[in-house]
Image (cartoon, rainbow, N blue to C red):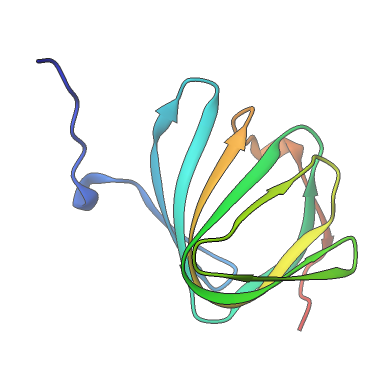
Length: 115
């Protein structure tokens, strides 16, 4: 059997907008991250190309998508189309899959701080 194992302590880590992010290796034409936050993502943005797939692993909160509030809780799966303005509040552990892979130059900030 052939396999690849990347230990959690070896994953690249990042702090961004009140979130702790672990970046997993690319899977095909996708990026995958695990994000943890006690408050949410205090920045409104949209991506011009990628679809965002959020899996709520733990916790609950609300996403604000083009100003519409969408309540989420553990076990929910939320798909957000490109060019949709996004921010969220809540204490959550999330898996985010972006397809195609996220590129910094494709993210457009619409509000530097939301609260």
